[in-house]
Length: 241
Picture (spheres, rainbow, N blue to C red):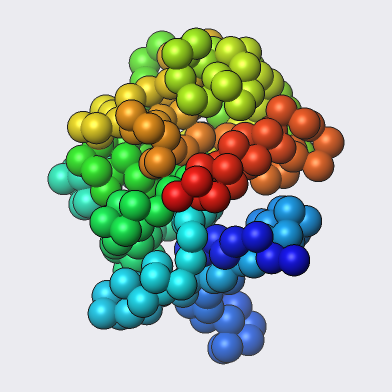
């Protein structure tokens, strides 16, 4: 029996595929479909569509997941791109920012992962590092880990008084696959977890109806009960409305 519907904002293929049908095609990672259906939740993929349709898409769901993907366009936080910036696609950025704003208007919980967590911060007025390695002078951890994504490689320190700590504790071990990161937290959000090098790893608003993490729990939940609890906590917020 389906308990609820959760919208997943689609990613966009920016590679040059042999099949013309895959050029700028919208897609969603299978791990999210497996995660939601395993918990009897119906996934509804939200593609890059005209702004006029976004309200109707958000009307259909009880909560929103914004997953990982390509870099966020620095124009959206009033910076010029640096040479280390990866591929960007502003229509995708705009879709996710507008979905977030509409979900907030409809009082529907939102959870962002990696890029999604960064999009939330930018949409609400925050700033990103375009590339951690070149823009932070002090030594950083390997945030783009060489190990398999399903392997947790470093710990994060979680604020004890945060909603996140209730789900994962104060010292969970996480995976890491990113080169951008939050530089300045948006108004209305607060940093609730950091890596040992100081890089912000999680944000949430006052009631955690808008939250996000820098790591990829969707690749850990099947063998890590703590990471599964992170999603269960989000599902409960969605259920409570």
